[in-house]
Image (cartoon, rainbow, N blue to C red; front, side):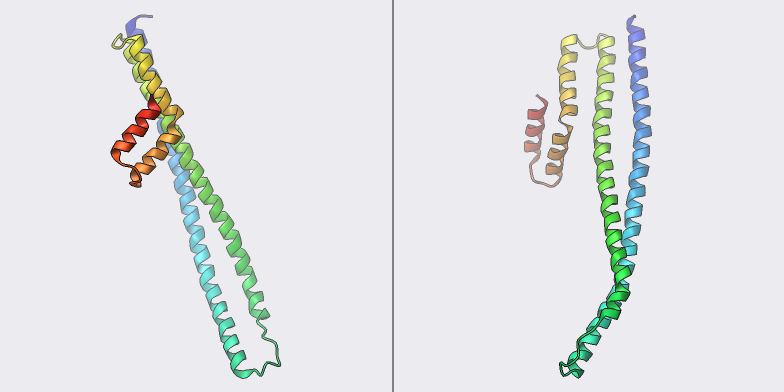
Length: 187
């Protein structure tokens, strides 16, 4: 296989990788936004039910005020009829809370999966670029190995790198600390 064929093959592989990544990214964005829309809809439903419950709580409070003002203590304070009316709404809120928690967990999983795919895509892109450079004799085997080691470390430690990036974004660490931590990981 001559140098031109090697370079053509490397470019073709890189192109296929980019196309696959774009398809995965599009699908992942759709799923994530769908989950977010559904979670937002559930939160609206919960808010509507909570407003209905506020009326019932107000009725209980009014009834208690009337009871204390007009009762000599010989009758029992009874709001069982109101509580019975509230029960379906309380059950619905509990159900909605479970559904919201599930949606939020799915959103988080999707974000984590997207971060993993992004790390893999970056690895594939860099590897294809290095393969092409090696095939075209632009870099030596030694340079290729050194660069691939760094690229592989970036993929292997993507979770730690992500945490370091979040620390920087939250101003927990400085840019210098960020660079030092990343460099330590990639060695």
